[in-house]
Image 1 (cartoon, helix red, strand yellow):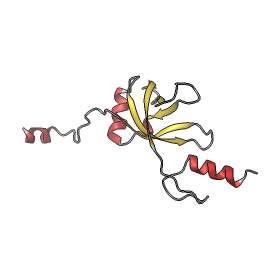
Image 2 (cartoon, helix red, strand yellow):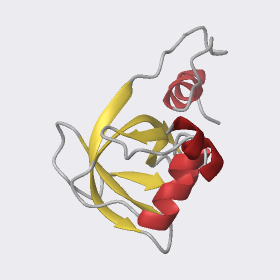
Image 3 (cartoon, one colour):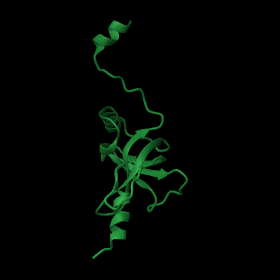
Image 4 (cartoon, helix red, strand yellow):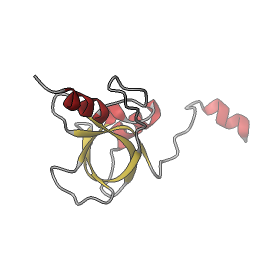
Length: 126
């Protein structure tokens, strides 16, 4: 059996910004990292955390499904990400493995993603 202290630490690692059952509250801090590799066909890659040296242990997984917004998800599925691009994300942890991944991530310098694909709206602006 694991101690209550262990359960509390585990809850803090994967907590949402709400009051935890262990009597602690947490507000997750957004981090910035640099894309090191991205596999467009598979929909995932890795990010080196800012201020950390790139290594298997410290790099964070980045998955298209965790991108912030449907338009960004579609754009990344189509275009992929290049090494060196900066992303802003919330660090979260897989409960079964304890490995970190980028949750609710977005590009620091995003591409222009139009609000509508309708050509009639563009014609009306001219």
